[in-house]
Structures are given as structure tokens and as C-alpha cells.
Length: 222
Image (cartoon, rainbow, N blue to C red; front, side, top):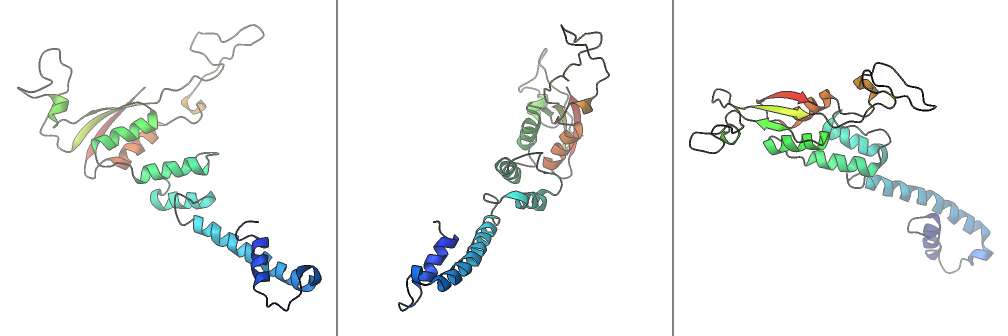
């Protein structure tokens, strides 16, 4: 017997009866009536308990989590195929409290998305370009050209995630055949890699965290 179930509510109703009612074994009619009332009340209690869970992100379940994601992010954050409530909830919370409008926030979202750290260069940032009499200056020191004529702009080189090959399809001129295994020859495309991060996903990720009125020149590399 658990709090709020049919038997719990029946016992509560039973204890509230005046003392002149006979015992349970001797009163099948009143017992049946109380059990019927307890059944309906237990259903209402379970519905209230379920509804209460859906009022908080940390306890919401099922389609309510999808509605919460839609309220905060629209179509930008959708549940993946067969993704559990726990996993989807973690994604929602991460994105709600994600750092935005900063260089660190841009780097972090690309790391989370692709598993690789992007290269970010701000033309007006001395730490990226070097300065006379300062760091990152001299022959043989890698760096970028700076320019004060490009405020509120940055150059980002994002990297696609390290993927896996397509089974049974090798490179051009290479056979995948083996004993009792025929070689498979066909033209492959990026669409044959299931669940991969697309270039559009990378552009959308950058756009979701970049500051307003800034320009992020993006190059995507493998």
C-alpha cells in the first residue's frame, strides 16, 4: 500500500466512518461503495501527482519535456530519436544556462557539438594578432593580421567531428573484398553517414551564441 493508491484511500475513508458501522467483513455493501470512491480518488491523486511533476524541468517527463524545449528554443532543440527523458532534460538545462555572447561561449558550443576546438581570431584583439613590444610578435611566430577597421568581427575555423567510414565502401580504387565477402563498389555521399553533424548545425550553433550586431566569418574544415 502506497500513499494515494486505492487501498490507502479506502482505509482513510474507512477510518472516518462513525463507530456504529459494522466491520469490513460484515458490511460488503458499504465496503464496495468505499472501494468505488477510493478507486476514483486514487485516479485523481495519481493525475495530480503526474501534473505536479510537469511543472518543473527537473521532474517533467514524456511530451511535457518536448513542450518545455519548444517554449524555450522553438525548433532549435528537438529530442533525438529514442532519446530518454533524462538525456533530453540534461540537454535542455545545459542550453538554458549556456554562456552566450562571449568568445568562451562560442568555443564551448562548438566543442560540445563537434568534439573539436575551433580556431577563433579577432582582428582587434592583440592576443590573437600580436602587438609591437608585446607578445606574439617576431619572425617565425604564428599569428594573424590585425585591423582596427574590423570591430565587432571575428574569424572562426570550425572543424567537423571526426566521423567513421561507411561500412563496405572503401576509397577510390581500393577493394573491400575478402574471402566469401564480395567487394561493394558505389559512390558515397555525406547523406549516407547517419546521425552526423551537418555544416548547417555548425552555422546554427554559432548563430545561437554570437552577440547581436557582430559578424562571425566562419570557415568549416574537416
